[in-house]
Length: 557
Image (tube, rainbow, N blue to C red; front, side):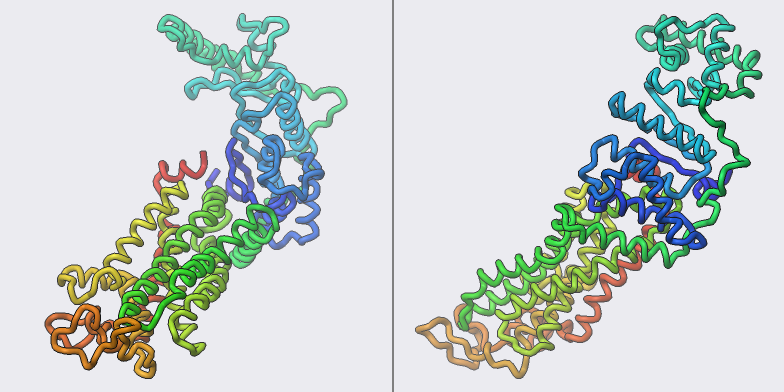
């Protein structure tokens, strides 16, 4: 069987699966049906299938409960329901009763047995510690040891086979567990290891010689039960194919919105971080900078305001992304393994959700600090916010790229913030003027967004020809500065206007009378947005590259 055929017609469930915590049980199954059942099947049939699966798995009573509030047994049944909703022909389960108590173990196995008999589907599961009460629900059993078959065949015929070769099951003993121990290597001592190895090798050879009749036969059907008939089974919904890419993208988009706007703690946290985190940071900036006075020191104060606006856009974006993206990222890895959708389609859906939040958040935040700049026109505010939006989006894309291979949100945040600190120190022009940079450091700034964003904000703040608020500023309330500035200006009377300040920050020693040539506002704004757009394209390609097994394992087990 090819991988494509398996993904289309079979389901696979590990003992660990990360569902979106913001969704309810009903929403989880609803979107699972939309993602996996083809468009040839009507929405009514999909919804009916979802309702039937909830009833079969005893989840109807918790249909409106959030995934994060489910008990372990309910969560495990929901994991199974996500696969059953598309009606796979074969369902594979790895330890479906892992860490469940005996009552819930019995419930899960009985549900799976009922599903197999009711719909004529095959259910294959592994169990490390099978209990005796699940014995009646198993039609066939296979014992493996180091890849060799010790026994495979009907469950009830297993007792006859082992009795015939001299290994009868003692009375009051769990036959499933007894023969599992018989098929397991004993490592308690060297002697027991050698002895058990020889015994298992003999059992394997014995089954090869005498197990043929048992391999072909199945268990007899228990009284009162019905035999699953392939002929009478309905055509599985999985046979109608998968939905198209547009439907999948729209479903992912709606599922993300549903996970955010669910009015529960998880959703409210996402809304708070996406909409209010950056405005709160800018409100703190407004509190600290609202006392700015029009003296010579305002040039340095405004320089600090620009730096903090840039740093806030980067750092808050990193924090928001590492707090809200991991759940969707981990779910993507598990669904991509099933072949439901590709990385670029997932990223496109996520950006359609995240970018509008970013625009609203940055717009509200920058309006708060824009009031401190002295600029007044709406156009200036839009430009002031636009360049910070570009910084916010770049940090978001950078963090998404890091989280491709780093599972820990904290580690990803540290890496992303560390890289951002380098950008800010090197290219912002706030901590060190470009006029004092060596040539090789200056050339490095060309590769940082901060050099263009910082130059744009500095030009907007200090280089406006029609804005005279920074002209001929006094040293303080008692001392005026006489300008034009002397050849060697004093430390306290340093800047006659904003252009003198820009010349000092961006001018080069070779041409002291000309500001650094990166003060073209249109060019800087365009390049600032080119960075996040380019990184978004890079991420789309990056999420297409097959990952090494050790990285994929982080997001599965």
